[in-house]
Length: 321
Ligand code: SF4
Image (cartoon, rainbow, N blue to C red; front, side, top):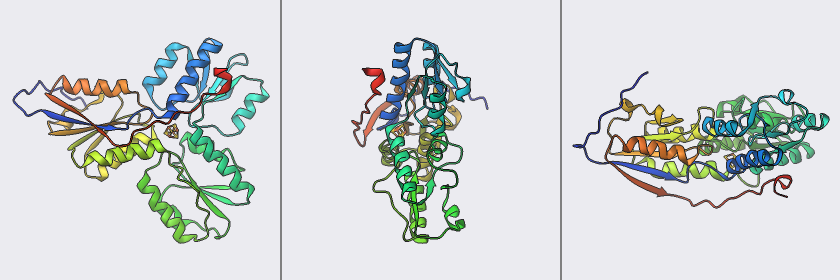
């Protein structure tokens, strides 16, 4: 639907922009982008990337202009070019196929996703069946399922799925996707523990620090906001969850990719608008949205710093040696 951009309304009170922190890039996304940039430096263009390196069109387009070619499957990669695997992780069959073809590859899987992969392997070695809490079709879920033999892991998306399970208690364990809703996952875990009292509970939460912190930061500001803008891609799981968190606190929220997606009629002229960004959305897009709003309203910016983040992941040795 086409929306009209309002003229400046100087007679109205200033619009307060409450900017959530932390927001935007996490350590895993930062590392994955650096890996593609370093691979381009090391090998020259083109470097192939299997799947969007992170779920953000702006990031993907910038890397494409630098010489990256994005493909969905390994058989689209020529024998003589390197390939990078995305931050979401890949099934074991993918690096195996790359080795079979003697392809040069760099794995940009986030270390926190790799940690879940190793946990899954250990649980299978112990003879357990894994209940995996996640979203069907998400590349991270497909990558994690691809770490274990077929049939040894069952996907759980909702509390209702738990009720439908017909499995004996005793040798079960659960793991989760890293980018889930903290609240929804807590409900599913409670349902699992109630139905399967002997289920193996992971030692620590698999929902990653970045996902948890961004959701907590939205919760911290939502009560003061009349609208919430979430900058992120429609296929970004953690961005979608941020919009849900706001909506559940009765704050109308919109997921937008860029400033041009702002629906000015929907935004209206509230006193306070919250702004956040998913883990794959660069800060430049946050600034673009703030600038677009500032061009039309008298704006007062406030950063609501919730949990400072200092996480940094090491780069693969083959690119920094
Ligand atoms: Fe890693 Fe979490 Fe970032 Fe995903 S959102 S790349 S799991 S730190």
